[in-house]
Image (cartoon, rainbow, N blue to C red; front, top):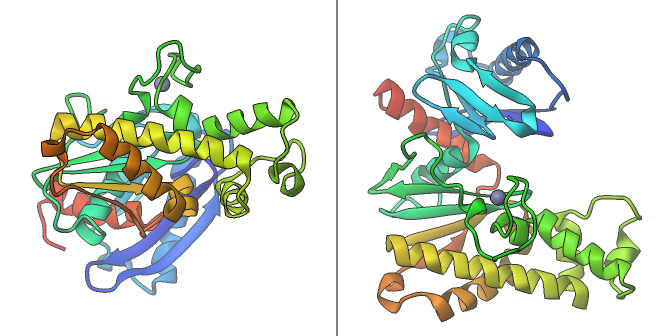
Length: 314
Ligand SMILES: [Zn+2]
């Protein structure tokens, strides 16, 4: 479930994804609407995969927000405008399969651990840089959720005193400095100050500046855009160094819209900043890579989630 789209897939461990259905989200949908919308997309996916109800072991749902995977309640999902939603109970009342829910970033981390670049990793951090910055933690091969299932809020690590205001209400958070909206805000400030950038040629005033536009500008060596991307890379590298010093990880995987569009440019800069600040012993043998799974990471994460909660092997 996302703020702009709902992406659904039928998958198994042998063939991977066998069918996908995507549809735009409905703004302002009520809890009752959501149950109808999800039921509908689930059956569309089963049909698209040429399957029957009996073929389905379970439904895994990724939610952008705070989620209790044990009770199946969504605490708060700001982008979906829903809170205190007993979604597991409500969906199971209208579906003949078990329903499991998990935070979407955690689900992405699980997907990368079991089906992506993290297969061999024991202690891994997955960081998604996009509209916000979120992380999933895998310790000893298992997802680490924390006492209130909120672990991984790396985007709200404080990196700058009196820094820019963050969506959480605090100042100087990591995502208020290095997420796409933060980078774009800095670029717009420069444009308003009269600095020349290719961005003003490719984006009409008032239109959103997406990751692809940033990548286009970087490819054309645009000074304004590269300077702000470079600064974001330094902050990302520094945060990853701090986390590595704390946790002594063996793998860091980067993903999300900004990284997908700019990985070949950003990764070397992130690694450079990381290497300058990390403790040498903590970083020994550690690798930093970009994931290639994109949105599929969270879809694949549904499989280990089902195995964990239903105690079965798929
Ligand atoms: Zn914050």
